[in-house]
Length: 161
Image (cartoon, rainbow, N blue to C red; front, side, top):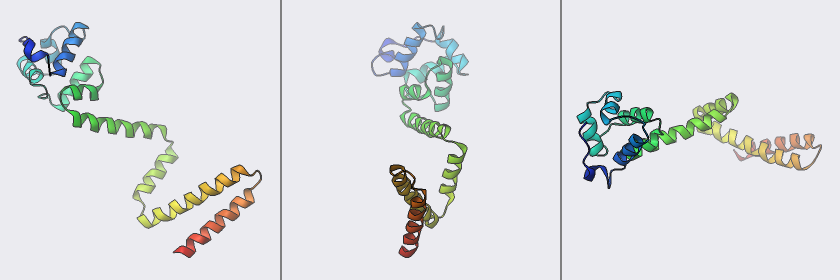
């Protein structure tokens, strides 16, 4: 691959700087080899790196995989900030979902598909359960009191409608 001129490699081109660093760390032998692993011509890869941001999102993802680096970080280096944010957001959602049990994920699914009026009823019931549960936790042996509180709260909710 034609050498990237120093004036284009340095300065305001974080992707070129990062690739130079990875090359020094022996992540790849030549830019030509790296371009080939990405399914690109050397000249296209060189121009894309020189013009920071000309790599597509897909090419950035393939490049990150080849360099064994974080995809959102590489997307940012290539000027694809928005794609990086979307991926990080998706990752955060997935991480949360992986920590939820099947029953919790099912409750979320039901919540999302419920009619707004049903959500109000469910939210009222959960608030009552939470408040009554907190009181029951403070006073030992108050299971009957918890049941009375729930019945009272349900009756109050029906009167409000």
